[in-house]
Image (tube, rainbow, N blue to C red; front, top):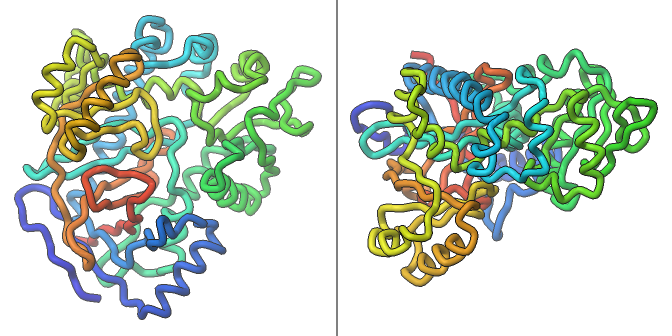
Length: 410
């Protein structure tokens, strides 16, 4: 394997290392990833989105990322406990009111799988622009790529074991429902890898939509099968659209779920604004916020003139959204596109926030410079592995490339 250009700036360092695969071996690898690990969307817009290179972290940088991810989990847990019963906070976070009863009564120590996507800035700081706490993905690539590649190379190792962490968390439950948005094949692929893991451990599983939840003889059932727990891969903000939302209001408090709907508190992009306003914030939480999170404000229509004038400085975000679909970075769009986006936000200001842009440090790959993000999984508060991506622009969308992430032994 040969090294691509390493970044020699101060602070954390990354470099990309090419896989020692021939073109035919790489084609076979992608085929196996698609059909053995259900990564059906390995190609997007006719382009293979799995880069045949590994992003390498120094050992010290890996340990720092693990500490940051676990610190964020604890800080967010404290914020969630305060916000979950505060109706004003829930409205400002953009959470639909119909979910208030569920969010207020769910188990505080409920199951959790989250992913914190860390960007390395040009000045050498790790930044998190949002939290993936509701229905984070990437399971197929996170586990499939290391399994298929084997060793990541001399003096390198894969860190974390997402499969084992998820299975350990769900071990107490015999029958587990895997609920997802059934119109999306890319969601089904996540459920199929989970189904395999769970069935290999002896669990019974049910694949279904949240619409299939019923209650019979006091027990939650999915497609007629009594279930002991749920793995929800269905956006929480979509739940009010379900025809059986009244059943969910009755069943959810007694149904262990990964992730519970209270995770919407952490998922909302507006969380940074509310978090920063807290005057009695724990000093450690304040440090996390100020050092690793961008300045964020709730959207206000009277700030549109300022936002038009300072387009390059700001990012407009919907409170909820997936794969960058509700993110507009002023510096990456035309004046008209920015003006139109602000007009849409002004028509529904409670659904949007503005965030100060930070400059992401590019990394050189064989195909040229890309902007990476290191995704760190956390399961029940503990680091569980990596799912990282890179894009041609500093905006991660469904067209971003998956990049395997390994850690140097020294």
